[in-house]
Length: 298
Image (cartoon, rainbow, N blue to C red; front, top):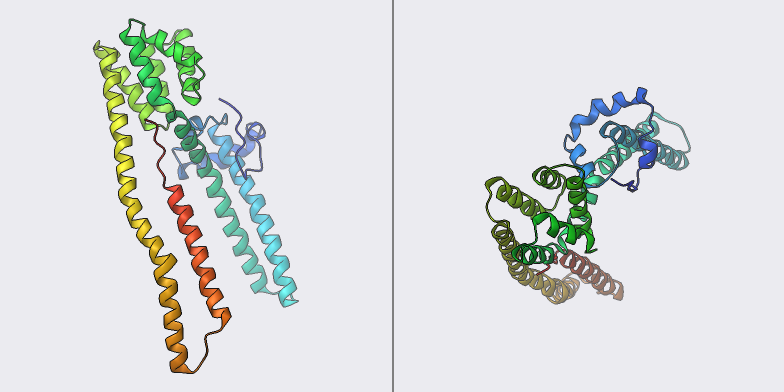
């Protein structure tokens, strides 16, 4: 486990683990909100205790709530030039909303980190699968194949498998070490890889056959992802043409017709506003389509 800095959390992980035990009851009381957070912390490689992280998130959100309250309170006093119950009420609502937003962000952020790690893990997993199949088929043991991949510096997947190798070297069985990996990781492909190996080791079946099944499944899944994105992209192209060409043109025509009926002229400001809205909408749509591009590694 490593000390990952959680964005927007006002406590470092090291300081969160040092929170006085007399305050930990707060984390225990609200831990029911996200019961899966314990596993999210492990998957995100955040070296923080469950209760400590909840308590640190609570106090961090309280500080943000106080900042929002103070800022909104000051702005309301400047605007109304008087202290009223409405000013206090609105300031309290702003602070409470700030608390909810940042508390939810603190609790959700480990999941984002875990998903990022899963994506980094899957970058080289298909290539690693092929290498392991070749090594196992040539007579190298499963432990030897995993050890070679762990030493090959192939990114996050090598780090994940190095943990498995360390556990095996520490005396843990291969099955138990792979089970720990399967429970910890957020990568669905790595989970399949681990459980297929576990099933093969339990049943005594050839490991190479199980790995080939995982490789075929992963390859087919990524090809299917590409096809689905290609079909989806046709719809977004249609939307883009509609927003970039059809709607601005129709908008100008409608403005001209309404101006002739109502007697008001269409000024340059109207046209510039329409063009500006169209450009902003196109930028948003392009960014959205770009974010939908699947990450495939065949």
